[in-house]
Length: 342
Ligand SMILES: [Zn+2]
Ligand SMILES: [Zn+2]
Image (cartoon, rainbow, N blue to C red; front, side, top):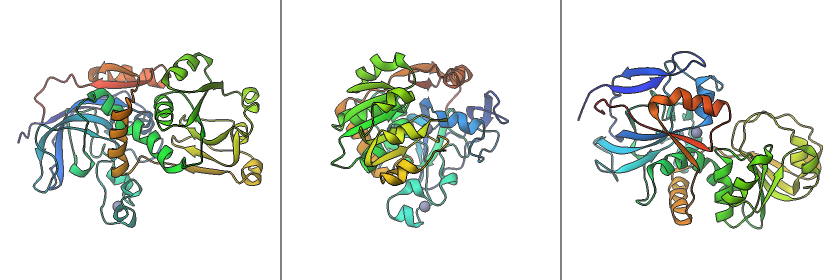
């Protein structure tokens, strides 16, 4: 096993650009695998962590949690994988295995979730990473590595709530936001058989939203939303930031659900929420079983994220594109670090 140092890109203080960063390989735990990274997607959560939005970022911080690469070493107890296997790794790289949620197979709710992040100690904008082998998922053979990488966070983030919260007889689903998450949510919801309406503040996204599989497109301004009264069983809000929530809540059927998967700011009048028995609920990542199901479903139904490939050495340009809302729709960084990979 190589013990050469790992190369990556780290931000050394809140909000700063990333810079080349070299570190010693973390010790490989007995259930761990080391994965030599070929691809890593750029997620909005990476940027929020760079900016310490969640208040949990330690610096120097190496972001990156939509990882694809090849297994290069295995701990003594790691099973189900072998050297050379191509795997995907998402935001969660381990779990305590002992809390009530882990014991129920809901590892994404682990009581030690902050410690379970793949990016601890350092994330996927690196030449290699070590995670618990149970959180490294073999990718279907026909799936490209860039598609696999995007599915590891964006994919599971939108697939899991559709499976969790859109139980029959729900038929009509609105996807709020046509971005990195939303364009995938449209594809999954369509493939799952729902009547899908894409809602976006950008009228220019209509054609692409329909091409992704939306049956309808609506500009999400209050006037247009008024025409959607009682339209949806479920609204999946994939966009971050601030919204006018009352017109969205008014677009739900009675007992309808608003499901949040990003981290938007909430402030609204609760009249419609209470009077129509609406629910606001959430979904965070997905458990391991749903992760495997999602990969097979995406493979079987040809779910195809729209991807811009960029070399990892241009990580700061990629971050700037995402900050300026210019990414169409997901940026995946291809590892171009030429040093020996650990
Ligand atoms: Zn993410
Ligand atoms: Zn746990």
